[in-house]
Length: 195
Image (cartoon, rainbow, N blue to C red; front, side, top):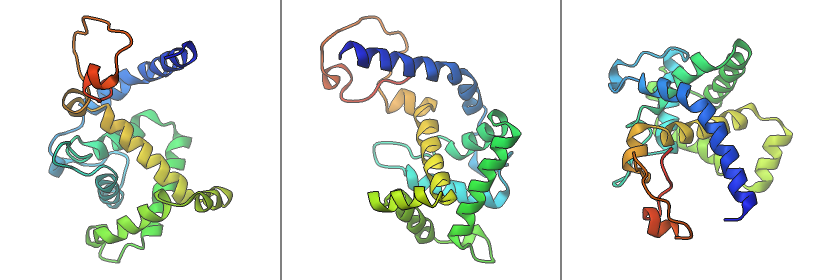
């Protein structure tokens, strides 16, 4: 690693460490019983939509837990309610409402929308070609921006969860030695370090 990359990584670490304590406290306050979750920021309908989208963004696999397993929707809900100011909350709500509008939810509610409806929306906006992405940006598509934001929040919340940090990523609660110039595969089995 050259000096420039090292300084860049240090800057990223400092940026994450300044928000990490409040984010971690929010994550720890998330209930582990999804059935008992009562949204704080989202409406009931919005929470159903968020749960479905987050589950499709980071599904459970044989080797790793999914976003629902580590309470990502609950984290996003609490984070939005506690970390955003009124202006940001209004903007965020506008994005979520645009997603709901784009889903064309039936009158019976979001519970009755099948997975295909959610997948189609994610495919359209998050698997877009470069030309389509440019078009979404030129049109200032609220749905596109909201889904990008949701995906980024989902990945961030997932990576900062205790379960993923200790069981999926490389984790050493008391790092004892420094080994320079070794490959990531040799150091951690190819996994990124848990923060």
